[in-house]
Image (tube, rainbow, N blue to C red; front, side, top):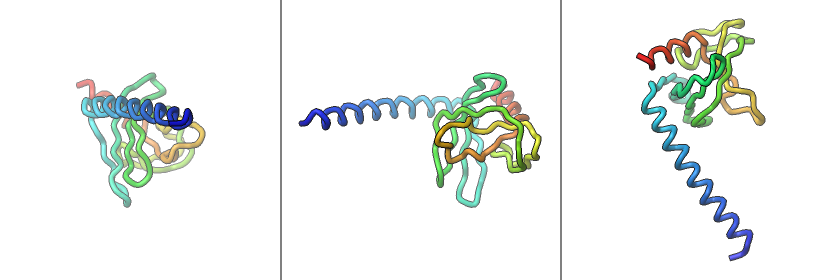
Length: 130
C-alpha cells in the first residue's frame, strides 16, 4: 500500500466515523424536537429546529429530497428583502418582515433562498419548552 493510499484510507475512515457521530447526534436532536413538514411540488421539506443558540441565531436540520440535507445549519435573524413563503408555517412573508434564513457562507447552501418567519420560529421554540 502506498503512502497516498494509506492516507486516503485513514482520512476516509475518519470521515466515516465523524459522519456516523453527526448522524446519531442529529437523529437524537430531531427525535427530541418537533419536526415540521412543508409540501412542495417536488416533495416534502422536513425541518427541525434544534437549538436557539442566541436571540438572533438558531440551528436547523433541513432535509429536501430534491436538493439538500443539512444536519446542523445555522440560520440568522434578518429582515426579508423580498416576499416569499415561510418554510416552517407556509404563511406568506412580506418584504420587511423579520425572518430567519441560512447564514451566508461560501459557497451558498442549496437552500439559501429559504426563509422562516421569526414569529413562527419563536412560537415553535416556545411549544418545545411546554
